[in-house]
Length: 110
Length: 113
View (cartoon, each protein chain N blue to C red):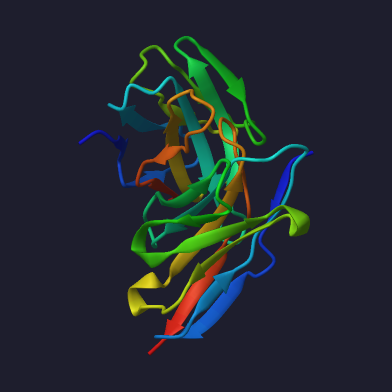
């Protein structure tokens, strides 16, 4: 069965520090993979997506993610976090009926 | 701009009452979905519809019902059979093409009086 795992429930970083949010997937074939961000009381906004080709994908708001087939991972990164990045982040796999991870809550300290 | 509109933003339900959450999209997407979100549990699929007049149960359909009479609209009714309806409900749509992401509305928060 397809699955997406986000191992970290909460991540705390200082403003200006680098960020990496982990996502592991379990799929038979190369999956479609997505990262979404959710601010409190809002819907999900797409940050970036991976379908095929270049394994390093760029997204909005300065985020990027790298697809690593050997590690079944699709980790989200940002070189310098801003206070406004504090939110819930969801990794998802599959397209038409995606499987979502449980989310990682990002806390940013000033 | 195209998008998904959910209404109301906040909704309160009395015991034994059915309530309906609205979801409208002007993206011309074929597929629409309803998710329930509880703290720490991510998104759980309630119902989805691939085409007008057709819909399928998701993982947690008990206590909910939907209709898809128009391509643009996919209302969700939370019935009195749903004993724990307090949650954040998200509506989403998908164009039906494989390599595209879902689009989401801004959600409705349902609470019990």
